[in-house]
Image (cartoon, rainbow over the protein chains, first blue to last red):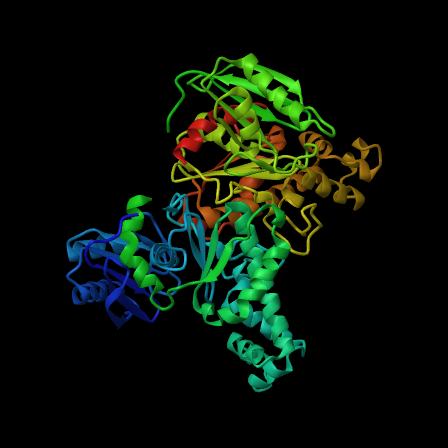
Length: 318
Length: 318
């Protein structure tokens, strides 16, 4: 693993804002800036402008990386992005590279989060790690044998669409029972809503003003923190679903460590024990293997930008 | 990838026999031999004798490798093996190495099969490949970034225990709905038996002498080859279950190629089209990615032994 000698800039493109950081060789953020993500028809050239302006503002720099939400090829082309407008084979690396006059490294935002945790976060020094982002959906990244693993096309880490129940609820991807229908932020909200409809979480129903359809994940978190047993049972069920996927990933990949990132990391104190409990219940032959470390991410809001700033090094070794 | 200059010997330890091969630097079998696997209480020292005798018989050789059924640590210790007697932390690499006076490479038999396909079989030259063995259960191996991936403990590739339906039939591993309950040889038999009990496969029931409990996977294969529509529907359902797991592996690992090995490879002509059909139905965003190659293994009976003979090279680069 090579670390930067100077400053590298990373920008995380989100659906509402672009967040840029300047990172020094020790993995410290020395400057940051944000701008709204241009949206609407014809906004993609404006997005390139925005990225170039952010990079200028944060420079001078040696290396530039960008994290984007969607399927990214190994050449840095964004093939599709549900949360950006008009994206179809959008050559971020090529267009921005031409604009700034140097090589630009581009990867999926969850892959960037994996890089940030692996190089300067919770999984520093870990050669076999799986990062899972628990947000609205589920994404992730993979390090094996001390190398970032991107797969043939660059699409590795789409853990959210592993099927955990082929007769489960429909997924926007067109299938049923994808892991992210259960173990993401929207999965938690669905579990809580179903409990409210079934009159099993009266405190949560209160918080939702009596309307089970208005129940959100935050409400079950709040009630659970107040000690509400019904809500703690929903959290336990949620933890079981997270563990079901982690166990499948363990059986396939045998990592030393799982890092859990994404928006749900804010509720880490509630979920971590149920996740670990169910992991031990569900793993194949637990007595024959050490329990992997399961921890929440070190980087929160800056995970994508920091990882983007480090892509040049992560891509070099992989 | 380094190829051997002289002869390497590989031995595949099965529940009934040990099969040894001498392999030249071009991946050709130049000699082979087999002996019964010693079984019963106290047979493990006899197993070491048997392995040493096979190696002697096939030598002289430069390198020696052994494939064993079960969970194998990175140091070549067999932690558990349901199909061998009395195994608990059986140090195959250490004991055999002492006996033959050189380093012995030991790995899981499915990992050996992956190595044989990757170095001298169907996946030669492929940097990102997943081997899945469809036998009584499901095992496998993984190559990413042109390296054999063994995971932290050496246990990667236990794909059979990925959960595809948490309310599905019980698995000997203690959980429910593991992939191998559906997509293995015993999974095919179960699907066929359920169809027979439901009176949906009269030809298969004939072949089983009218007893649905006597239905085996071979019978539904035979009836399907005769053109029996009911049996072809069972095969199609089986292909769908295989595809469910392959799709999950694609979403997680994005391989260029899947190689399907194990005993069910004998029915490749029947399964391959349904598997590919369902894969395309089930994969996330098929229009955005090339279809991976899905092929049956090149090596059959010799897969494990050939891969064991190549472990020295595969372990070296990983």
